[in-house]
Amino acid sequence: MISKEEVKHIAELARLELTEDEIEKMQKDLSAILDYFALLQKAPKPKESIIKGDLSALRKDNIKTRDNDLVKKIIDASPDKKDDYIKVKTILQ
Amino acid sequence: MIDLTELTIKQAHEGLKNGDFTSVDLTKAYLKKIKDTDKELNAFLSVAEESALEDAKKADEKIKSGNFGELCGIPCAIKDAILVEGQKCTGASKILENYVAPYNASVIKKLKDAGAVILGKTNLDEFAMGGSGENSAFGPTKNPHDTTRVAGGSSSGSGTAVAANQACYALGSDTGGSIRMPSSNCGVVGLKPTYGAVSRYGLIPYGSSLDQIGPIAKTVEDIKIIFKAISGKDEMDATSTNYNFEDSQTSLKGLKIGVPKEYFVKGLDPEVEKIIKDAIKKAESAGAEIKEISLPNAEFALACYYIIAPSEASANLARFDGIRYGLSENGKDLLDVYLKSKGHGFGAEVKRRIIIGTYVLSSGYYDAYYKKAQEVRKLIQQDFADAFSKVDLIFAPVSPVPAIKIGEKTDDPLANYLMDIYTISVNLAGLPGLSLPAGKVGKLPVGLQIIGNHFQENKILAIASQLEKLLT
Image 1 (cartoon, each protein chain N blue to C red):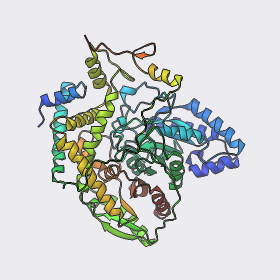
Image 2 (cartoon, each protein chain N blue to C red; image 1 turned 180 degrees about the vertical axis):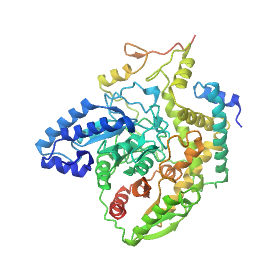
Image 3 (cartoon, rainbow over the protein chains, first blue to last red; image 1 turned 120 degrees about the horizontal axis):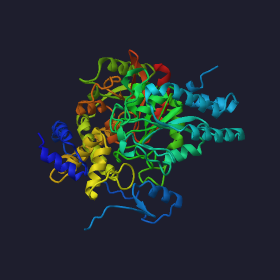
Image 4 (cartoon, rainbow over the protein chains, first blue to last red; image 1 turned 90 degrees about the vertical axis):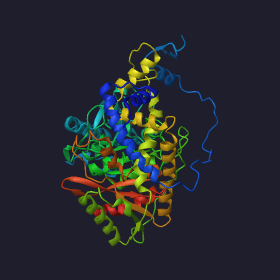
């Protein structure tokens, strides 16, 4: 069984607040699911590498200008803003 | 007078062409049907009456000019994980309850260019995570064949809307079976295209290496019309591919159909098994050669999927942070804003998958879970490659059981995940798969899954169209 502390640690990594009830339920669910995942240890090793070397789909990292209207809509969607900027709480004290 | 909402795309198109009715007539008929039936079915999260009628008026102008395609003026419904500019896009999540899409997904742009009428946005499992539709933050969609049962998910509203004549066709998305499952449960046709066949730009991402947008409709012919309209290269999605759909002359006569022995085992409902085997027999009677094949790594697919999909989900859903859009809770510092916004905004299944994904990617566990799952994914892909060197198409069930009762499995996530056993491998291998109505258990429809090799939607559709006549 996964410990309470472990669930809390993972939830914090995921930036997810969980209630005490949720943590308990998650302990049970996560343990059952991880037990099921153990099945994969029986799987054979693949013959080929899992890494593909094809980079042909990549595009150049060029700036593309967008409609001002779209820019405005995207900024408008943010809960807290000032002028053309999205506001975030202070990070550095 | 005929009920306009019962028409297929093809029939409605003929009617529009002959001037039997207008797109406004069609649109009004569907809007009325939605009003009359959706309190009970809960297929729609929002209905865009005004803009739908505007779309219809525009389409009628185009029709008058004489130069119009098969989708022009035909009303459709869109899964609420796909952005339609100016309309809410919630992903059936509280965290996006009031979010309005700032632009159109590429598939929507294509449909609009073709003159489509968009009736509204359909219900789904929150962020497409689920196989029953019950994980929606706005209540489950009911199955129109038995309203005590689920529609199947995650594109639950799209499946029900087409089956209940609330829309002529719908778009869904499929990460592990989310188009095929509701299509099977609701008795309609649904296509999960090859990975890369349809642009994902403007689809709220869940598992980006697995997600694919596709059509749900009443007939195979309609599916082909929609697929041709939405597929192809899009510069906004680097994984999209140039796709030139060509009709296939493939016939059941002489066709080699593979039937995976690993799929007909314990857990498959005997009545579902009988329907699938009867469909296979009918194909055989029509001249197909049936071959038993083996997908030796099939037993690992579910575990593989439930590592890879939640891993990708945990990264994709990091964007819902209370800063850029959606629900934002007050907090004493930035971390507190994150914790509270996500904690209050996401539902139970989404939280579970974020936790699974974060766990298997975390230091110390990465090799045992994520890396192992990627290796197994390769094996599964190889299994299918081997199979398609021997057969043209693979026939399988879509779901091990017909539509379950609402609430039947909500407390047991693993039991719920097992429902996806026949659909997820197709996503892991990036293959196309279609659900075709094959029969009924009582009043509950059961779908046959037809799986093809990469970019062979044309073969699947040619055979499905011949089978459609034999199975009904």
